Length: 212
Ligand SMILES: [Zn+2]
Ligand SMILES: [Zn+2]
Image 1 (cartoon, helix red, strand yellow):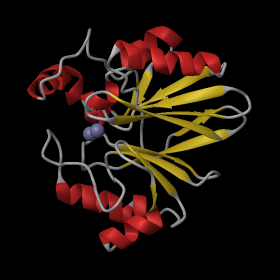
Image 2: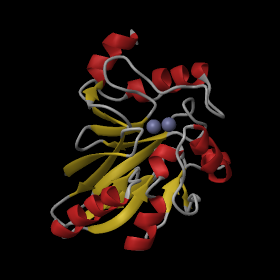
Image 3: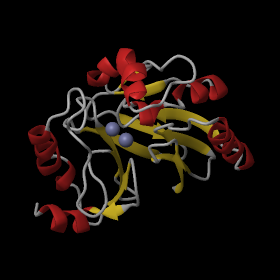
Image 4: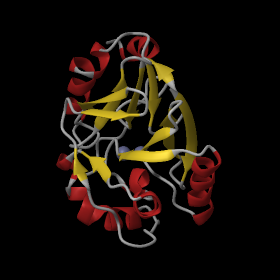
């Protein structure tokens, strides 16, 4: 599995593209906001001759979905996200405005509902398992590739002891800690964690920081 990460939009959100030798790819968290960011994503996918198979959202906060409509119209896919984040469909524009930002066009809606345990397949047998991690947002999920030992966790966990805020709508600190303790940290220590913001890390490192 190959991986390219982009840092997009004024919130410095990580957008990931995963692919394998089949050239089928998955985009996780399309945060491209400015036109040149959308062009950068498009020209990467075109120059690598990738076929976009899935658009996955770790959660539906505005900084992770700015580019959803662009990806949907450019490559004919619909975004997949956990429906517990549906409050954000109608409220992303307003919350975003409170951060001094504005959606260009209509904020996106959840196309395909995801559930805990869903397995997303692409390429030559690559699989991503959806792990529900409520707390940062009610519909927060991780996408776990067991064969490659990597997990894309959105804002549930950041490198060097961080985690996402829990003061936005539907956030719950105790629930996030429970999600980390009972779900994410049950994965192998060697798992490489790709967060929604900032650099990658490993579960082993974060276990030390969080004392879990
Ligand atoms: Zn978030
Ligand atoms: Zn975020």
